[in-house]
Amino acid sequence: MHSVVVPAEPYTFEFDPATTALLVIDMQRDFVYPGGFGEALGNDTSLLLRAVPPTERVLNAARAVGLFVIHTREGHRPDLSDCPPSKIARGKLKSGIGDPGPMGRILVRGEYGHDIVDELKPGPGEPVVDKPGKGAFYATDLDRILQTRGIKSLIVAGVTAEVCVHTTVREANDRGYECLVLSDCIASYFPEFYEAAINMIKAQGGIFGWVGTSEAFLEALHAAGLLQRTAEPTLV
Ligand code: C5J
Image (cartoon, rainbow, N blue to C red; front, side, top):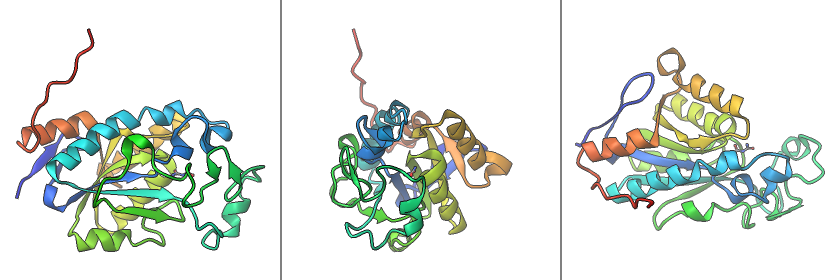
């Protein structure tokens, strides 16, 4: 068994790659890209977009060392039969769930905007869990997939910090998974919610889990001898 030790808060996070998965939450075009549903709601998507490059580095490293990778997407069946009427009505939006949006029907499976951003496209053998709620364990087979693989720890990236990431980390924690949330790989449209989300995870001795950075995570993989150091292209 390899043990990887990542400097984190509130204290070091230790994991065995054989029983650890990278969980990439809802990195969907409609939330992250300019011109999508998120922006149509008046949000600044650049705050989300900046989590993409570090997540891409972590995803590439996870693939290189053989970590199990799993992606989630928030969305519904085209007939919306899995969407509570309360969710459709919430916000009294002019264009909401199921309506035509800038990138296809909003939060509907199969639509362009519902799919994962190009940079973080799921690879072969990486399950994509479609979830109707905010938490990735609610009404999905995520727990079954993780249990079948013997997964005990989760490295977490995704959006948004205070909604789907937080709900999922709380659900995971209650199910006994140890979560390391990578602070630069999660994001929110609201800086104050981002800060609070991070602080809530690591408070009280890590009440929901640990918080670290992508750099610390990658460095830990190097230090454990699992990842080769490659020269980064330098700007001249
Ligand atoms: C996610 C949302 N993925 N903010 N959804 O966080 O509604």
